[in-house]
Length: 215
Image: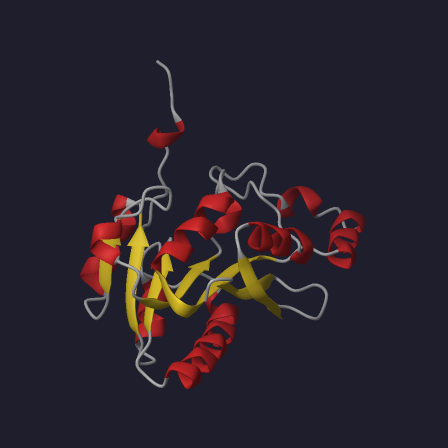
């Protein structure tokens, strides 16, 4: 029997927060708070690839109106039953339900998602459609830099880091340079990075904020 990629879906077993939420939540909230100061209103946030909705819920608890989008059926079931304070829509990043969403979001976030995508450019393009003027795109993804890569290689942990034996693992590995280039190619400006998790230059993740040029 022929197997297609679409037959393999991420499955979620519970509504617990992912381990990366412990070190990414504060940097995400810091960026959102800066946007709130500019807009002086309750921000609407779109969470692309929200998984089981746990991060969506944590952000909503801080006073934001958050809508989560997730393709996984198990993720949607958990999110809707566990976090009624948020709106959840089932859909693919590659084919978002524009009629249900509209271009009315102050910020679009995507947390530890882009490294799983065959076509990461589509996420960046999709986000632009849903942002208000002066809106902010926030992407988090595992950090890769020369020193960290060297330490991984010398310690024999490179194979584990690249998740080769993890079904549905990471397939794109971004640096600040490559993520910046992707965003510039797709018409984003004001690109800024912060880093989180572990010690400097061995960071776990980078948090990138940017805005469409036409904003």
